[in-house]
Image 1 (spheres, one colour):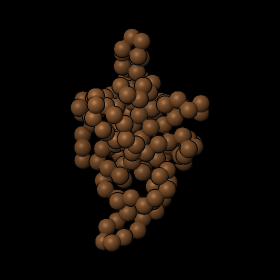
Image 2 (cartoon, rainbow, N blue to C red; image 1 turned 90 degrees about the vertical axis):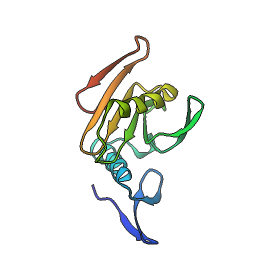
Image 3 (cartoon, rainbow, N blue to C red; image 1 turned 90 degrees about the horizontal axis):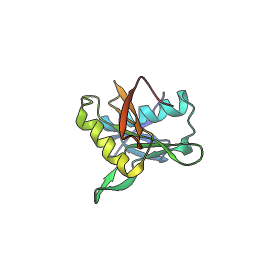
Image 4 (spheres, rainbow, N blue to C red; image 1 turned 120 degrees about the horizontal axis):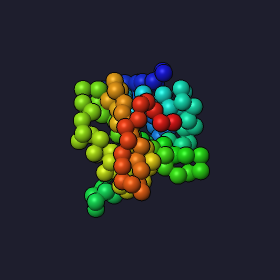
Length: 137
């Protein structure tokens, strides 16, 4: 993965191939970009099926998800929450992705800090969540 970077007005930025713009390169953004490039380059998911940092309403509050991956038919496949590498993937982080998914209704949720990625399959009928070994797609 080769991330395009530049220094602009004293801050480091990277080019987001999904949003097609330069964004500040924070630790969380580095993880988000790593996952984007991994999905596009390694998993061969077309860039048009990935959405980045869009606003949604969760329990009446405005929130922004990190990544959403769509199925070929346009239905949401997965919601992925990104954290900086120093942030541990705790129950609270998984619950954050789960809260977003109450609005988005994806069959999979994931969390990643760039060092570790966890994925879960959501069964809405039985209201059960199953931990997955590795990426679901």
